[in-house]
Length: 477
Ligand code: 5AD
Ligand code: SF4
Image (tube, rainbow, N blue to C red):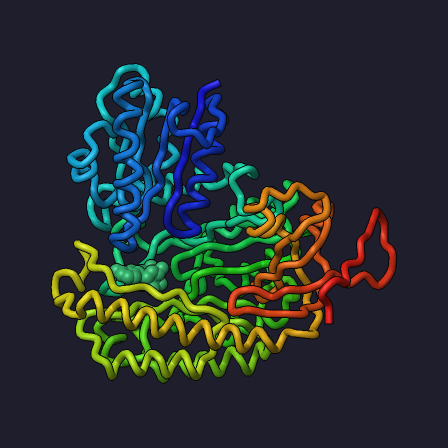
């Protein structure tokens, strides 16, 4: 048995890519280890969306140096967005790297590793050219690669990611993704459906559809049949065994009434929508080339609430983007006050060489100002999340149980009775006392307390069902 160590940073797309790489290497006789020292192959799946993510990878690679000196036969590989973007730089900073593979070439990894082990020079496989040259290659590779799945690499055994879209065509001026992952392409609905059925057969209850702008999904078949996200959801809704369908990340302009009505009408669709606003100022949105105004975004929020009154909406914001004034920032604060997002991910602007902003707009907001705005916006969002979570106290929610809570894991609790964690249909985290046997079940939980990120509850047991059911009433109100 050969041993594989894999470290993943970045988005859910990267987690899915790592899952598929592990699945393909298992076929070639590898088993997973969490000890990089002992591994025959160490892979780093990288992210380029902010400088911080790249720094993290370089420090991991730095730690590899001695390991590699001690065991020159160990294969060290860098995959993902940073591999696509910075091949030469990676070799300069970490000359002991053997393998560099872009996100569109991951299916070549077993072969490339074998070449290295047979004594070949360092191997590089990336998409050529910034855009056009990459199209065919990315398309071909993903369509043969995606169906490979590895349950051990999933968030939990009954939750899985499913890619429905590759790449991005929006070219927001700050963003490197269109350069690393290539142009937007919707995958064939037939392939998506067959993958969903496989996942259901493997015990998956929740599928999270992935795309950079997932609600812009579109596929036209050879026969001219056009499929949008709403149509795809209706087809996926028919797959037996799947209980919940989520989709991330959404693009505000494509949040159509038809899609919202589809989510409303299909009980398996989670009323949870992640729709990054990025800024509350029209001047900033324009410099970002986001393609909508704050008024458009607010209208979209009204449409969401009118169609899905219980929907939870979350957002992303970039603070300190080029030229952002105090007044621009105040408009972002106001948008957050008005929209009352379930949660927001807040990022300090990080210049990405190769993007339009890096070439045309000065990064002129001082680091301290970025940090202060980040803190202020986060404090506001946390206050709103905490306030809105209070509304759940005394209410019953339906929780898909994921496993031991973070606290239980930290304490090393073994169970079977211990603190568990799960999520509501609208993606809120719920912590409660339960039994490990309940993992994977959907349970009614009454909420008795709430913080900004967590609801605390007790399982409701109306009547004794099959198996040893436990009623937990401690702490309940
Ligand atoms: N700097 C900071 N944040 C960024 N994001 C994307 N590019 C950058 C950048 N250059 C953020 C956006 C996006 C999220 C995934 O990362 O908010 O929605
Ligand atoms: Fe980047 Fe904009 Fe595409 Fe999102 S929509 S991946 S922020 S270019």
